Length: 296
Image (cartoon, rainbow, N blue to C red; front, side, top):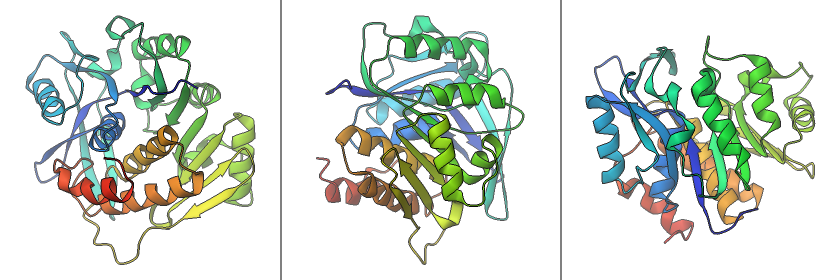
């Protein structure tokens, strides 16, 4: 395990377009990097945006938030990613366009001599061979842990490909519906998780279960469940899983026990769903967690 290094976040940066006309910065990897920056971890975000106004806005927002932009490339041919978000029965649905700038992340924009403690990636940006190749190159030089955050967005995924990326990972996070798509059906969630953990030789598997909370299982066999706080005023659930993932990475980086990491991840995700959208541009939102977790 590489120590005293930054976390690398690989994947899409985009704008979520809501029905009321709001455009909010998004993309699961971007959201995770945004939260980690607020938590003083200085992540390296590896992505690609278009040579357009939206791309400029992403770069400017990152700089204003204090994030490094050296690994945010500008693509001359493809636009900055946009996703149309609709809310149905309180849950977000996504319309994801093809051939966005984040599909064309390339190895040339990576810093070859830089090592990271943890490499985080999702699955959406890996729908294109260019970004797949860049991640393969990054993994080939990586000496730390790998965290995969599964995001199955039809029609942009293939089971064999996702299972292959899972085989490279140390930690994995996905939701209960995604687990059902990727794993043989079992009688209980616990049984399904134990089998999945063993199949992919993972150190830790985390499964989120929407309003029911989340569960984790580790190699030692410990099974941990956490539930959201009661009485929350939910604005929307966009980005709740990304908030959860950010704190999982924080726990990995700071060597928190898994039980504590899960409790803190659930606490932060519960707070995030009281806000509109997946990112919060007010550091005061993060201050209670920074203080409670001694991150200063």
